[in-house]
Length: 246
Length: 391
Figure 1 (cartoon, helix red, strand yellow):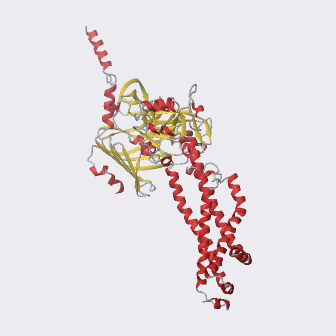
Figure 2 (figure 1 turned 180 degrees about the horizontal axis):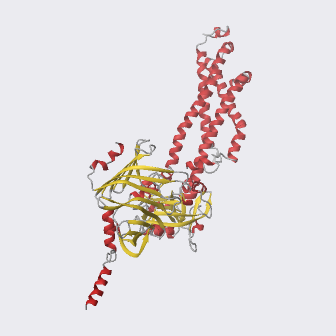
Figure 3 (figure 1 turned 90 degrees about the vertical axis):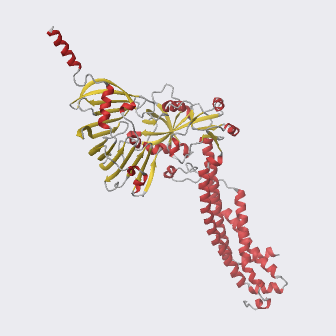
């Protein structure tokens, strides 16, 4: 009898091993909980590699929910003062050299941001993983020394930008360490690799990310988050067009 | 008699007359050359656009504005049953436009995908080669300017990324089936042509169309709902506006040239009135009225212009012939400016009506300028004139 209870207990314990009993949806919820905040302020560096040289663009960024975003470039001197404002589906750029604000739309949205592997369209992306995708755990692997679930995400609606994604989620920290974003045709469009994850304000957050446009030649664009604050109070006027010319 | 006298005076005037006629003929040659250039440019641009894009007319989605990139992504609409019928009859040809990102040799660039039925025959674009049947990759066609700017050539493979009707990314590989000379710049610069059905499939836009090309001008009656008839004036609005601006500059130049020529005529005539005062006195003594004497000088001026016209024809002929045969061509580097009508040599056609009107106007101007100095004659005392005195 004792032996039977022992076997049962062992089986139950196997079933409740960390990461084994959790559903795909719960994983996405935990990832969203790490990544999404009501508001945020960050200082970042974007390292853009071109054929001849690399350049680093530093910026201060503010966000409110997933529909409002304001960014100001602080370096290099040539780009200092360039500002970008996103309000829902509209995007404006202020160029201090010409003292003009232009709205980015249509074909311009498809252009690369400062020569990086990110397009303006990528900045327009909104929504959390759980809102946009249904998920399926494909397998468990070890990626860069971390135990991960490989998950396949299928868009819940036709208007989601990437209809399919494959993501590697760190089993312990619930952070995506590697992502593949696919077109409707199944063609791989972008990859995102997080090579550094830090504990910030109780969340695990990637602080060094490599974005790579897979249709484009090159080494990709490195993105460093040097500091980040979550759920802070940001004055509403930060997300106004008047801020661009200030 | 006045005419004979005027002719004799011109001959007697020697090099002064020749200089006057030369100046007038140079002005005439420049004006005729420029008139012919503008006339032939517009004619060629219209012909090219009509042959390659406009045909007999166009029905276009109201929201589309070629100068407003904001409008491009959403400028499409389904066809009415009546329009679909006309499409099946071959009377209308649907074209779908879609902004896209392309990756030639792994470089990110923007382009406009243009879907055209591969079995069309309304415009000169050789769409047959765009038939995707039995092909692994989507065949596309582009003009030489686009090929140069993307550094793509025949046989090259590149990726295309678009957003479909719902806003979701789609991407496909395409092969450059051919690179051709497309004289209509709007069908070349920034454009990649592919089969309409294929583009609709990639964009998930079944039956969506941006504009319809008409086989017959009478089909404008099909204008309805989302589709608006685009007449020639609207279609060529930019070209006509550019011509209007050019015309202004042209008028300034003509004015300057004519001013110089008229100054030469005026100067000669004023000097002649002063120099020939004894002759004026003699003519008056012989019974010539002041009016007749003025007429003599005015006829001399008019003759200058008539002879200058003849001289222009002789001197200008080699130039006019060269531009009519060989044409006027801007360097290739100007192709990318997208000026309609400059993609191939402009072979000059001379608008005789316009040229004759201009000639008549200059003739009148010359007569007037020749007459002005003769007003002095009316104030002359014949006796003083005979004695060589000036009033």
